[in-house]
Length: 256
Figure (cartoon, rainbow, N blue to C red):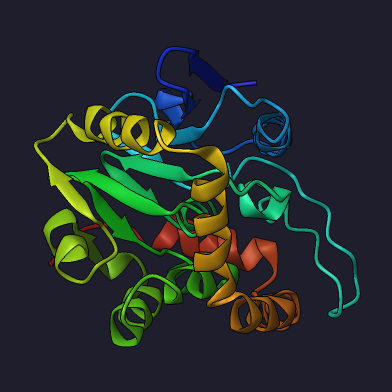
């Protein structure tokens, strides 16, 4: 399954770990299903009052969907089967606070998780980028998620520049995507500390605050996400062309 879940009954904090370090924690279909189930289970566990989500190994938080996964798509441009749509806590109606602890790379489909966390903590060597356009794919869901957290110009540049440029942890902190910057390897411990503080407060007040925060942008977010499947279906190159571009386009990138 490659998803680890650790519960600390003393602090009320649970840690969800994407555990495929050899594959940069890329998400398989089984992992996608396990993540959705994990968030739903937490809804009924009163002893879990705050959650940290992270990736194993230190080299990557997550690099999105495992490209070897075969995901059949409907032939209609008005329908799309995206296995990552349901991997986030909000998509599963979980309103307990979630903090993301990011080390190494976070790209593409990782934004489904980062976009539904309350805030991010990152090690100083973390880097954020979106490879979709480079390989002939529309960045729709990912861009919509990040547009809720980053200045418009920053998310536009990240999405349009593809693999040619990565946002450093420092730049992500300066623009508000990351709320706390730690030495490399320190993100998980910092996220745990923040989660423990939040978990020590009355649950109803915390969850009500989370719900209020999300209600401030929920209408615009929901409307944008409703358009995303059609944009992806209409704009993506066929899989064989994507694979060709993936093979052809590699090399260096710029970090800012």
